[in-house]
Length: 236
Image (cartoon, rainbow, N blue to C red):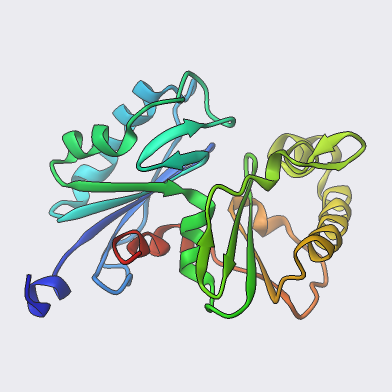
């Protein structure tokens, strides 16, 4: 493919979340060519229900030449290994192949926090991405290279619970934003001690509830990066 044809490629980018399914069209450099469209994640969020909901969501966005998908769980070679915040048996679902048949184009799938990380990291030193939503996602980069399959959300944080149990959406609703923010501040201190990060990026749907005075090495990032970072799946 020559450079002109490559520059004209349209990439469908999908972000599968525990609450919503989002999609948009990207140009060859990750710029958005369309508005982001969104529908609620079906309940129960079984593989059949989620895949079925994606078809009408993306149909108005055609044409596109390929697709990138961010998924809230462990993904290896476009196949889901685990999806703790979705319902049903996702383990072993070849999501890339299923969506490729559905859309008629090549599809790559990766963890949603990894994709958001590709959309924000600067490529210098240790950079950590934490996504705050239904659960807690994470991605770790060293000099711009992803350390794969990091699942910090399920590691113990405080009072015998994991980060996800203390900072996920059910916990935020239960304890309220003020206490949730105090927990987040403590988590940031823990993560700094563990990773000595140069930069920590906080994203995800619940980042809008963050009301802390953040240190200079911690910043909020726009949730749309979970869409635009999808172009990196065709570059790495």
